[in-house]
Length: 385
Image 1 (tube, rainbow, N blue to C red):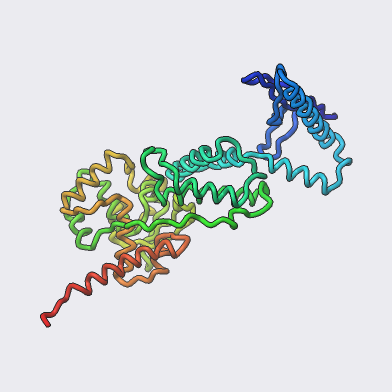
Image 2 (cartoon, rainbow, N blue to C red):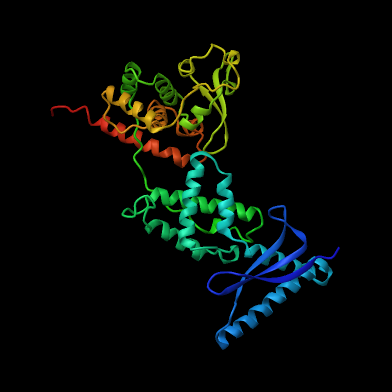
């Protein structure tokens, strides 16, 4: 059955009429896999043209719209009239007309957890920058460099008086680069433009950590939330993130005779599969049976552990009660693990693997902390000369 394509008009605001095509029977959209009867052309005419210019605009626009209608009908019903090259060019043109902002929005919906929050924030800045749609065909190095500059200089959505932090700009721009890479992989972009644009240089931040003396003080200090205390110390002994600890089930833990305890899990942040050896002392913090296989498989190890302002209050009170004045968050226990491992002689490559870092450069920041600590230690012995 031949597909009929008709040109229709729909009234919109400000005395304008939007032009769209109607397909009967409905056609399949390759990207969504769904059938549709309408295709809005993004073109309009004046409902009541008041001047010769308005009339000329209507005449030319209707002519172009009719040409598009004819091409759509030809492509659907008489594909043989186009050469392979012409069909490929038509396909590329159609892909180029799709909106990158909408594509980014669709990727954001697939994300979860804190990562989704970062993608949502990046989407908001992308929408502010583009002020509407951005066709794939209009994406180039120049516009991406302009977006980069926009992120570096724009005010934060949280406070209009403060410029967006450098590291937030880094994160949001990297989300856009990731989307461009994915779009290239799907054939929506003809060139890997992501590879042509450098990321924003991150600003080095101070990574607070605890010394072994401070950590032992926390072991001795009671906490209003014993579950939170066990989880925090577990992080200090394994380097695992809060997100991975809170979702960890007994099924992910195992004891191998002669080798010890292991955790096999999907990192929530990177989605990479990790096999992490953990110490007997770390395992004891789970309060499980000697062999984790005897524990209920799908039950969370730290059942009831939740992230909230209320739980953070217990954390800060516990830190303060131990006489520690540093600004310590739960994530600092992961920093503590990395720093103490390096300080005690574990090589950088091994620490990077234990932390599940994809790039060893991420781990090198801890080496700087250790070097600084050693430098301070070297100045403590002073002779009276």
